[in-house]
Every structure is written in C-alpha cells, then in structure tokens.
Image (cartoon, rainbow, N blue to C red):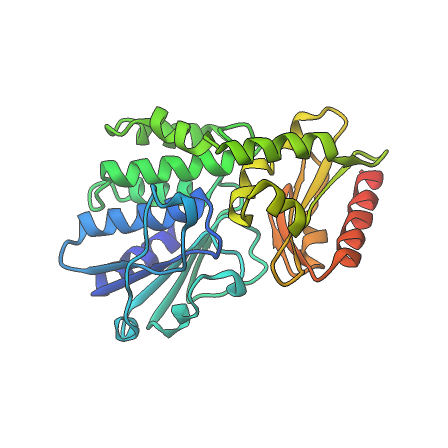
Length: 314
C-alpha cells in the first residue's frame, strides 16, 4: 500500500485538489471522480476540492462538474481517475497542477503522472477509490453520496456484476457501500432506463447485426440511422451490450458515425482479447472491452477483419 500512502500524504499536503476523468464519461468515470470528491470534501472541509471536465450528458443525475478557474491549478494536486491515456483526459489543464496522480484500472499503456496507481484486477476505478477510502477508514470519511456514486460506478463497469472483472473483493466493497442509506434500486433503475427512441434503436440493432461465421458481430450506425431514430451518440452506450445476448456472437463492434464522418468504435468480447486491435486504431482499453476510432468506413472494415482474425485464432 506504499502508493496509497503517497497519495494520502499528497492529499494532506495540498490545499487544492482538482479531480479529472475521461471524455464522454460513463458511470465509472463520474462515480470515481465524484465519489473521491465527496470523500475529500467531508474528510478535509478546509480544502478546495473541484471536479473538472466537459459535459456529462444524461448522467447528470450522478454528479456535475465545477467551474474551475485557471488560477486554481497553481500549486494544486491533480488526480485523474478512470483514464488510461492522456489524450482521453477531459480538460487539458490537468497538466498544470503541481502534482499529478493517476488512479485507474485499465492497462497502464500510458504511464503518466508523478504517482500512478493502476490495478487491472479491479472491476472499476470506483472500486479502487472505495478501497482507498476504506484503507484509511480512521482518517477518510465515506459519505452516503460518495457511497452512492461509487456503487453506481461499480455497477456500470461490471454490467450489473455480469462481467468477469467482478470478484469477491468487488462484492465485499459493494456490501460495505450498501451499509450507507442510499437507494441502490433507484440507481439501478436510472442506469437501466432507456427512452422509447433508444428502445426502438435496440430493436434495429438486434435485427440488423451482421454476424460473421467466426462469431464477430458488426453494427454500423450511420448519421442517417441516428437521425432516423432521433438518437445522439451519447445515448448509444445503452445498446453496446445487446449483441452479448446472442449465442452465436463471440465478440462485436458497434460503430457510430460522428458529425465529421469519423466513427466511434465500441468493441466488446466474451473471451478473445481485443484491446490490441483497439490500440492499432487510436484507442485502447480492457482486454474484453475497448474503444477505438476509425476515420472512415474503410478503417471500420479493417477493424472488423482484425477482429475476425482474433476470433479465428482463439
């Protein structure tokens, strides 16, 4: 726990702590960022604790960002949660503080920061933050709001405890978080609820997924299709896990066309390792859950062919 001690000492010595996370945040990004902020505010009421980053979309029921002025970064401790590499950090001012700390659960391909805590065995960054807080239970204060946020982050990144990253330690931490008087059922409902238009898009995905003989599934959501259903890119996260319900699908990609013609690529797998494919296309992530970017349909098809090779070699 030497690195935990270094982080704890850096926090105690800093008057201002600014917490960042990745762009296009998911529940774990906001849960780890917001949960840590709530813990530090309660534990060190005289410190200035701020959350930095861009819009949070329809996840604003979890937490929202602070208005962080440039001068706040002078002598500040900056902590980045749930972000594997620097290009994905939301708000480029993260490098302007005095000390930079990385707390993450993705493979450490970009070893940034003065202090780096990366635990790839953790289900989520929210699990790491909760573990950090409970490690210093006599000095750090877990609040009800922090517990709620961290619970949401763990639920989000474990797919409601369905993914292989869910461990006995994950469940013990969740049990400890649920000792606080928030309402897990309400969080679960909010995280699984979808609008009618997203439900209709879900039907389209299941009806139109292209499945190769190797078990690789492909769904391309063009701008025209997105407009047809009235859905924005941020809303498509709700349909990413749908192909997993099909028995013949082993791994899959969902490719969402952006306004500039590029494609955001969400890659998932039931077993074969896919993050090496993502790294070749301006992305990365977990072995079974990664993201990438494609400049056009030609690159999308290159990604699919590489996924087929992975499936056939597994």
